[in-house]
Structures are given as C-alpha cells and as structure tokens.
Length: 469
Ligand SMILES: *Cc1c(COP(=O)(O)O)cnc(C)c1O
Image (cartoon, rainbow, N blue to C red; front, side, top):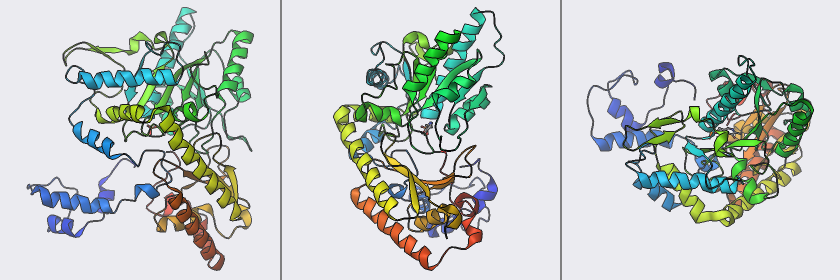
C-alpha cells in the first residue's frame, strides 16, 4: 500500500452494519467521539474484511497463506509475548536462538553452534542488517589501509525493492546490473566489471522476484576469487535467500550457494515465505561470529538482564518465531522436502499446460528456482489481447495472477507469473487452467479494446501492483 491519505479512506467501501454504526457521520476518517459495544464493532470490521481477496487464489504473493491448526493455536497462546523482552520470556528467547543455530546448520556454517544471527520482521529488515554489516566491515578495511570511506557501492542484479531502500536509506551507491536481451539475471562477468575498492559487497539473489530463477552464487563467488587473486580486492557476498534459502537445502542439497562458499559472509531469508511460518518473521545470519561487526550490536539492560541486540525494530511479536520453531520440529528436512516437491510438480504441470494454450512462451518452467512459473506472449505485437487483459479477466474470477513489466533495460518485456505455495492443490491448478481456457475462448470472440489493452492493470483498476513482492 502507498502511504495512506484521507482521500483514499473516504472512498473505502462500507458494509450495512458499518453504515448503521457510522450513521450520521459524513466523514469516516474522523477519530470517533463515542464508544461502541464490541460486538457491533467486531461485526463492522468483519464485514469490511469479507471484501478482501481470498488469499488461496492469490498466486502473486510469496508469503504463507495456509497454516496448520496447531500454528493458529500457538499464535493465539503467544499473543502477549514480546520477543525483545528476553528476560520475561526466556523460553521464547531460547527458541529464537535455537532457530538461528538450526538455520546455521542447514546453511552449512562452519560454526553452526556458535555463529551469530537474529530473527527479523522479514527479509527486508534482514537485508538492512546484512547491508549494514557489509558497510561497516568495508569501512574497517579501508581505514586500515588509510583509504577514503566516502563513496561505498553495492553490486546487485534485478533485486527486490528492499535493496533499493537499503542503498538510499544508508547512503550507498547502487550498482544495479540491468537486464540485457535474454540475460535476466546477474552474471559473473557483469559483477566483475563493476568491482572496485569501494565495493562493500555483492548481493546475489536466490530466487529473483521477477522471474523466480536462482542467480549463480557459486560462479559469482569463483569470479570474485579470481578478482582477489588478480587485484587483491577481496569482496564479500551476501545472499538474498528470501525464498531460496528455504528451498535449495531441501530440494537441491548439492547446489553450492551457502556458507560452504567461503565468500558468502551473510544470508537473509523470509521465514514467512517458504519457511512456512505465519507472516512477520525473517532471519539474518553471519557465516562466523567475526563477520558481524561488534559495533552494530547494542546491549540493552532495562528489561532486566543484559541483552545484545542487532535489529531495526525493538518490540515485536514472538508468536511467528515460535511457529517457525514448530515448523522445524514438525517438518524436519523430510517434511519441507515433501511439501516443496509437490509445489514444484504443480508448477511444472501448469507450465506444460499453459504452453499448450498456444499464445504463451514459458520463460521459467518451475525447474531449478522457486516453485512456480512465468511466461510472456509469443507475439505481443499481433496478439488481440495483452497479459494485462488476461490478468484482469482472471481477477474477475478471484484469481490473482499478476502481469508486469521487467526492470531496466527490459521494460519492453511484459510477463505473467504464478507462485505455487503450500495449500495450493492439484484441484485448484485444474480449476485455474479451466478458467484460463474460458478467458482465452472469450478473447477469441470478443477481443478486448485496444485502449485498455495498453494499460497496466495497476494504473487503471483498483488492484495493487504485485511485481515487487
Ligand atoms: C520477498 C523478498 C524480499 C523482502 O522480504 P520480506 O520478507 O517481504 O520483507 C527481499 N528479497 C527477495 C528476493 C524477496 O523475494
């Protein structure tokens, strides 16, 4: 959502109960003068929420939309637990710590039992922490050699918006390698061209938001090893494993992307994506203890006890962390592998069937990256409809299958993407395919009007642009 303004709120739909409740009030954005009984207010809000989408038909999001009843129960039991209050809730604190070391083990840290890491609100906060550690470590390296610390830069490919935020908020030059022709990912050659002594690190994304593909961490690491040997520049890698860090360990255990590579100094992941935890938890881990500069850690003693913390937030709910721990114990490697194997299989089925429709060319078919797929129009110039039209019609039936354009320099390429997550069933996959077929039949008889056809969904209708999530 954008920053809210009152103009938008005025336009918010109201329910019957709400219009009774709000009765003579003309402005729905005024702070209420009187109190109300809880049942009326609950019903009002409940009715408003019915107008939200059905999250199981949302094939745009990477985030958890299906949880077990036991997870709901734990969330309920944990509503009062503030994870920062480690003295009051030592069990919650111990659970968080265990999760960090289990992840360090999963990601092959050489010091899994003693390395350092923390939970966060998601990958975005984890990315800020990872970026800050890179910047501080670089500054130390520069100072030790009597060099300037004025102009840090960070190299990356087509990243999620959190890295744009990091660079702007923390004043680091962004060196974003643009897409070019068929190359939609970061490559070792493109990284090498942009490295200099002010490069604080390279961000490699395991599971690119736009196309779901994994970037080649191992190859980029080898290129940086070569650069080190050739020039003395020793540039660390941070892996943005928002999705992939909870996929690769179970599905592609031999893929070298994690702390097995000496150059990978830190990793972030979203517990609430393929970690399958409820919304609100991410993780940031460092390879070894000394990879996180001590100056970034604060010691807080006013909640009782002395607690080291590295976080942008202070108070935060503990439930998601506890549920993440539940998932680790409940699923183990075997359970995660089973769930994800089915997700990948459904992605491949959809890719196959969608290719058979005729007008579409599959860009990513669900193999080797994130479970899901994406496609483009084979021949956009002569097609009677655009992917925005296609997305619009599917949305009328409740399916959220976003269409969006690529970042520079492939803004001309419009694609459509489906994420397959836990809770999406074979039955739903076939329902969706039937719906797609009937939309295509409809287009054959009633080609959409051109004026609409050229307009991105987000610009015309009330839907939200999902490309960045
Ligand atoms: C989702 C995502 C993020 C942001 O993660 P949140 O958990 O939503 O804050 C960052 N990077 C990538 C690659 C992502 O997919």
